[in-house]
Length: 115
Length: 136
Image (cartoon, rainbow over all chains, first blue to last red; front, side, top):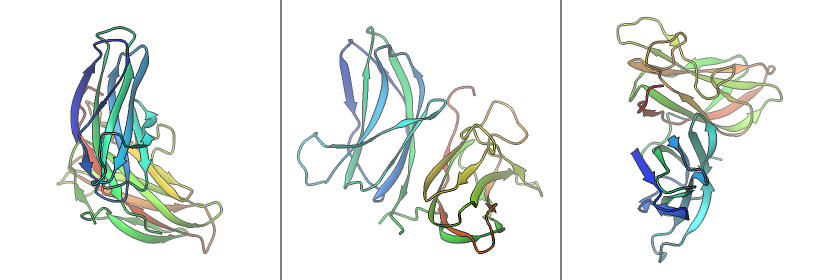
């Protein structure tokens, strides 16, 4: 689990912050996060999953899914065909500096294709 | 590839069948239940998967209600091939049906509706446990 993390906007630009690259646990995964509070009045916090192979150079990578709302702050994405590494991108746009969000990412469900 | 990723690695469940998993120790007050229907051979039948919970000293099980889905039936309903999610979120007190996990949990799996000869193949993934970090 990625424990509670607070992001505070220092300006009103569109910002995106990345997690470190992590090794996949299987070919597919269901990722879930809980957004505990979001005061961004520009664009709300959006969490995207990126993937690349270990041999690939650079921080640029393929965005494979954006976590979408289930209910009550929980967002989820079912991602199939992950490459060797994955990471999260947190994007937001504040209406004024000082706005922010608090969230945590739950452990994913890893699974391989069975049929 | 990964360490075991499934609680039930793929099982056929037939019309009118109900079965339970073994009791498992909880890993937190709250849980995410996920299951996948791998194959469906039924026009109108559905699979209901719900959590039951109990304390170690209990001899009976307590049914649990999901936070998500929030409308009845408050459980994980599979009616098509694919992966589905249910969230069980504890509150500050106790509830009936329970909202949070007691010391042990198990899954109840039921084939609902449908007709004779219908079946699904499903797998249930390991529960994801977590605790509330704010009053709920």
